[in-house]
Image: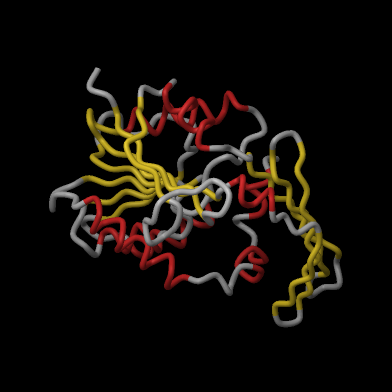
Length: 244
């Protein structure tokens, strides 16, 4: 089974990442909306929406928002937030969904690059593009692989309550692979893997060109400052769907 199907639906995922800065993430969405200035009636797609916190945030601005995720567990949680302008569906990002329907699509917080083969990433890129109307915009927020590779921490131990997570990181086949080991409450050893493609800006441009999308904006952090390959913490890209 693909690693993300096991890990993202696991309760241990939430335990390990409970200290993530949700406020910074929410502020990023507000900053992004201020930059994009979407019309009030815009239709928006949150791709790999997880449990829906950012789709919910977008919907609170009055937009017509749809969230999709491959995790049944995450979508089951997200459906509690559904309203007249907010819906959630279980969906593989590689498969077509609501063709030529959305004005904006978002892929937040490194929710791409999970597949072992480039052909699957190309399928996902084409699916993203297909969901958009002509001239529609896609925002992808990814880790800056050049900065991460230069500062990769090979090993660390993270404690969350009674759980002690031993984490190792390595570069393997153009992916950054993180192994997460720990003992659960029943004294059972557990191990999960995260494997994310080390895509550069040039890789994204090449991929999305095959989906008939062109890069129209690049930023290096959640305040939308300029992107610098060696020291920016993020790689935030805006792609536009071509007219023809």
